[in-house]
Image (cartoon, rainbow, N blue to C red; front, side, top):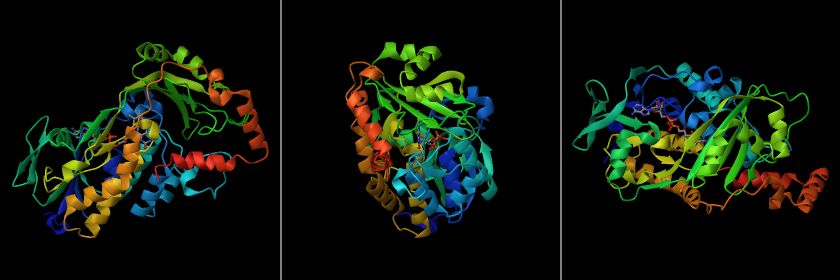
Length: 411
Ligand SMILES: Cc1cc2nc3c(=O)[nH]c(=O)nc-3n(C[C@H](O)[C@H](O)[C@H](O)COP(=O)(O)OP(=O)(O)OC[C@H]3O[C@@H](n4cnc5c(N)ncnc54)[C@H](O)[C@@H]3O)c2cc1C
């Protein structure tokens, strides 16, 4: 069985959020010798067109992430706040002492990634190898070399712990998961279409509460609006994949905007800013649970995985970045405690902390027949609107807001 004392150093595969956070968290217990990943494209506010994949979509960051960052290193949250990324009450109607479960970090994905990468660069000195991993060679139950898509394999000392943070398409995890019956890999049957906006002018009038007033269930389409820092925000439509004609229609920016404007709350945000670029599409995110490769002895003894390489859930839950932080904190604690049976202890902890939440993600809602117009939805019946307004006027809406936010906090 693997003992922490078997490991001399850490090799991280990948160069994304999970890789950077893992390096920051694990370096104090196991030095990060090097990282292998293809060269990074610089994307962000100035190069929005270059954004692809999940990074081109609305992101929200849940309280589980706040709690995990605090547990990983108490200096992380203040350092992130210095760079403009901080957790705050998730509703304008709540004050600073709102319960933990109702807090959120509002940031675009590139703003969040930039901050984590900046902290990584400030704290970790390591060798970066510009290459794409294609697999691993093993001998006697240990990885002895990392195969690359170009060039010779990189030999690995059996005492090096290889941490896989290469995301959903991890070549090593894909091979391991293929032969593992306990692995769960299900289509989400949903397509995301996202439009970014910038130049938000909040001086003109206060805008509707983004997480409370703006989300709307249209049946075959769910709409969400997430603010970022610096006047940015995005609107995403999660559309049942079965509705192909709807998908095609919503790719048209004007059709997308006029659909979103049905909600007067969302329309107020749209009027206060400019759309930037064409809308972006993400097809069929999956629910995956690869944890069982660490339960059965299938994984090499000097291999672990974090982030999307280990688990993914439907993006509407907004939970994946916070789940990656949990994987990383668990590994940090196991290494620090010199856990004797690393794979067993890791899979047991991940199962105990995350599987129940993952199972809820699997219980997807039935595909709706079509789209219910905003005005016709049950939550917009005049009596319901009146009651909402009254509760707000009387200051009695806070308990509901706290419950709504806490129910989706992933804590
Ligand atoms: C539409 C959408 C919306 C989402 N919204 C949210 C949200 O609101 N909140 C939330 O918490 N999460 C959200 N997520 C999930 C979140 O984006 C991911 O969980 C997160 O990006 C995972 O980070 P990661 O570092 O594990 O993987 P990735 O971000 O995929 O990073 C993988 C890294 O590995 C590198 N790499 C890939 N292949 C190789 C290889 N073969 N060799 C070497 N390096 C390689 C890549 O270059 C990259 O640097 C959303 C996902 C989607 C699809």
